[in-house]
Image (cartoon, rainbow, N blue to C red; front, side, top):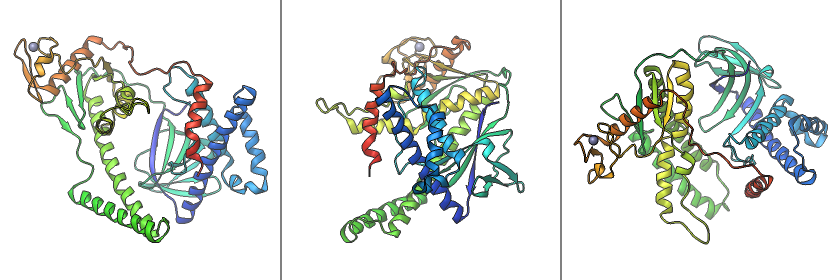
Amino acid sequence: MKADAGRRYRLYPTVDQEQVLAAWGHTVRALWNVALEQRVHVYEQHRRTLRAMEQCRYLTEARAESELAWLAELPAQAGQQVLRHLDAAYDNFFNPKHPAAFPVFKKRGHRLSVPLPGQAVQIRKLNRHWAEVRLPKLGWVRFRLSRALGGAIRNATISRDRVGWHIAFGVATGIKAAALNGKPGCGVDFGVTASAYVSTETAPRIKPPGLDKRERARLRYLEQRKARQLVHAKRHNGGKYSNRLRRTSAQIAKMKGRETSRRQDFTHRLTTYLAKNHGFVGIEDLRVTSMTASAKGTLQRPGRNVRAKAGLNRSILDNCPGERRRQLEYKCRLYGSQLRPVSPFHTSQTCAACGRVDPASRQGCGRLFACAHCGHEDDADHNASVEIEARARRTGGSVINSTRRRRTVPSPAHGRMRMREAQPATRG
Ligand SMILES: [Zn+2]
């Protein structure tokens, strides 16, 4: 049985283990880049695509070479897993129903991660809150057992982000989709400014700021200190980062990591509430990619209001529309609800009472909806959410065609173009 759920835990390696894991992370990145380069090269020379099976043989040969000792230090299973992931990246690129572009090289500053197959790890529970995982060549590493695993482990991924180390397990839970819960449905209008209006509620839900006043002040202080230290590094140190500057950067990263986690928490709570308490959840079927495309234009015809559009894009993405939908998809399955994406056209101009579409209903007044025909008045976002609910009810659970962007026919030329874009990033 394949993994059908992910479980992510905070990992607490010792200082020595941390060094080994970081080294592995860089090796994984190098291996990915070399393997990708080899595939592109072989395709250009021989018009055929290498697969993981073949590249695993090359990997075994390379591990035996004495000058590639760093490669041999990475567990063999991790290396093979990287090559299998590259297979998956290619498969997604060639799948016309998948939005993935051609695989790209990983930069040095990229998040470190080490993939392992399930049979390479072993888990032992220490007590209610702690467990440890046995990693090949490294031994037992403790992690915080913040929730039960609930199934057999199919794969494990160790990663480092700005908060610290984590381990994520792909778990086969075998949980089937729940029977329909039979509760009344709802529609949700997600605003641009990090808010959500549920049709069954009387007030919008506002995403709380990730940091409080004191934390924001501290972040500002740290950023000012970093700016000062950068100037100093340039003037007196030939641009070389001092240890203090590194420390400041790490503190800033930690602050921002905390902000991100709190914002993610809001989204998780909201989507869980929606899926648990409603028979269906209507949302607007938005084309996030085209909605948040850059306005920069081309060199010959530069776009206008580029910074303003970038700011709008940031606030749309800050509200994480794609992630929200992903969460609703799996949570609705889990709690016996249905996710019903509806056409987003004119939801804000349609009267939820009489159904007439008229931009005049939104005239002159910012947040107020006043129907120009029947006189219905409501908060504009609530009116939109009621309209979304009505559209979702009309679809009756039948799957509508997604307006998500489909990629056109894949071509090797497209891949080469992406390669060229990626190239400078890997050098230096
Ligand atoms: Zn009306």
